[in-house]
Length: 624
Ligand code: ADP
Ligand code: MG
Image: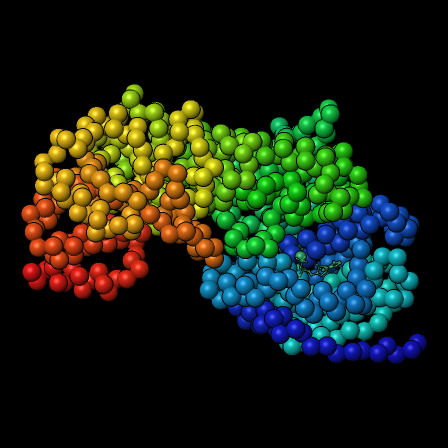
């Protein structure tokens, strides 16, 4: 026989780094390597099933697909083999020598930060195969791509230290066989009961049967024993599935080690035929804010696995939902491109949005504690909903949570329904204020009038809030009203008397006149107000002008914003205003008015264009 040529390759540097971690870190939960390998085999079988729809010859007359595990105690080896799609030589070099995923860098970084969370992360980031080095001193992979000639197999070998060897081999059966040469201290993984245990913990619900080679003491023969259920969980009857099984299945399909908060399993027949199983996680995925975040459902067509992360079935604002959809109406040869503009997809999407929203509504109704966990994790994502999905606006609105004056805490727990229920009969609007932070919203002078009249105001301080409020026009017939905007209906509600010029003392009329002249076109208008109690003056936005927060959003996004002009309102009852009224020195009066405007600007915007001028003006006045 001809001696086979062996080539030596270097691992990509990220892989080296990763392997170093795998080999030298202390894992509390080493057994996950088996979950990773089984899941790879299961993926390989899913790929074969999918490809063979158009090329049935890939089965090579062997359609009895399975995963087999055997143990050799004498050689201290554990062998996992499958007859899935297999790999070509090129595949092997690419898949088992590099990490193609763009998230690798962030994975490695987060590993360094969160030492105690390494195991959870391994699966999440899809660096599964390399986890075999947690327990092995050497790993060898024999593989052959389905449909290739039986002589075209590849042997991959490595001890995980910088390089790996590739050799051409003959492999009769298609698929992949992985041999782990276990480290001496990992002999527990040579026990059949231990392996069975791990499989039933992690892999009970993969759709491929997993067999283990067992020994019959009486007959003195080896036999293959099936150790998982190998039945697609979602196809079973709801009533026959236990809570534990739903949770395990969730962990299996997501690689998330936390339990889901709630799930919704539905089988729909008739016009549209599908099964969906949707989960709400308890913890946000690490990359939920990345632009290239891979969310989306697993897609099956008539029980056949088609693809992961199909984003076409859920809108962005529900991207935290995990799970699967199994459609009987889509064609098996569907591609991502066709999926996008397909009316079956569109209808499924509509239905799944409804399911997701009602699942969340149910969680809110049945278990407010868990709903709060959800809101704290994903509230910011859900807040994208009003802008993205006008059709379901009222359902989304019901799911939103806020903090308010009366909540007296930054925790967002108040629903709009609760806000309305505690409203006074006379109140017909939902009042809110947006600011950069909770503290700044809570202490805004705009609130003074509302506090005095015992009217609650929603305090909004998430970056997305101002954007969201553009789309939230009303809730159950009540309009939303920003309290930093001019609002004529307020007078009626608070029974504040309208200030008429003829009732004013002369010096106030004078004061107004002079102020208007000094400020000129720096402001839109100057007028007196009785909204304030503790503050001398405040700025209001005109009802049809852009608010301060909106202007900030625009300029943060690099857009040019027209200069904002405010209505400058002055509290005639404030001692400072009364004092300024009595100042006759024109120069000094002038300085005071400019200081007042700067104060109000600072309160409204949180910063000033020229803070130095403000400080020197104030210091000057302090000294007079
Ligand atoms: P992931 O499964 O997230 O892609 P892994 O590190 O677990 O990452 O596997 C890397 C790649 O190696 C897989 O994507 C697949 O292409 C290939 N691979 C691993 N195991 C097998 C197998 N048993 N059969 C075929 N291909 C495999
Ligand atoms: Mg994997």
